[in-house]
Length: 326
Image (cartoon, rainbow, N blue to C red; front, side, top):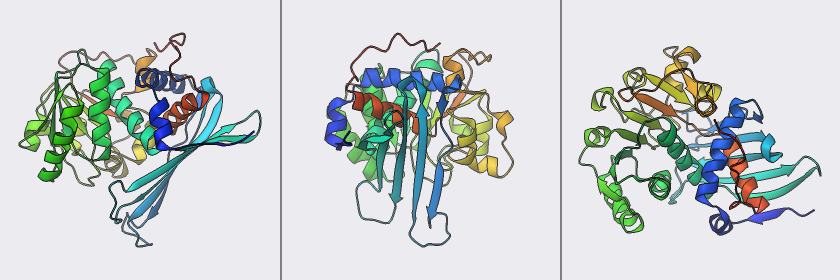
């Protein structure tokens, strides 16, 4: 058996968005049923934490086993923040066949990561709010933000994205590039408060200090926090009526909740549900129309492995509706 190599162009050509959304939902549900192994991300700091070595970089390993696809695999991502490059993060996905004892595929991982991260937001919009808002406030205008706009635009009926970035020129270039490619209108928000005042807000930044304040949010806001660091103030976290994550242990270690958890201000008891438990009917809480909800999907290796395996199987356009999500 040979190991197949997939470049970004191969991934893009064979990844079907509707199928991928169903794959993400199925994998979330199977994780809740304890039929997916997904250890928390293993991070190796290379100076981005202010310690030795002075390289301002980090590496993340994301292993997983997905039973419904009978695949084991890992994504390895390395960020090199000081390099003069458009995308400072690179990643590869490895797939392994347990029956043959061989690696079956090595796949460029950044396109899968971009789509997967955006699909997390689509799942939240479809299952954690009563109606998908017509306008979404978006914090950030980088690599991941582009996938958020294009993927949400393709799979929902959002009318407008209002984009805020501390680099106003970056936001202008972003909207100029995305507008011709989307049905929704993509505009620059005049201020952070304007972006935050929408019924749904997505933060997708690499900021290590809060970009979103509690007082900017409406009482019934829906916030999706995707960044790896501290994008929200403690007040913005605890103001939510429902805090939903993709995996509890991982979200206590990395992402919007990690700083509060490290200080002891937030514990596992403050997390209401996982998205998998919502999909499978295991969350007893009722998310009412006037409730505010915070969704923190920090990203699961299991999703990357599942999406990659579907591409490798060549069945990304097949029907997986036989699987029950709820």
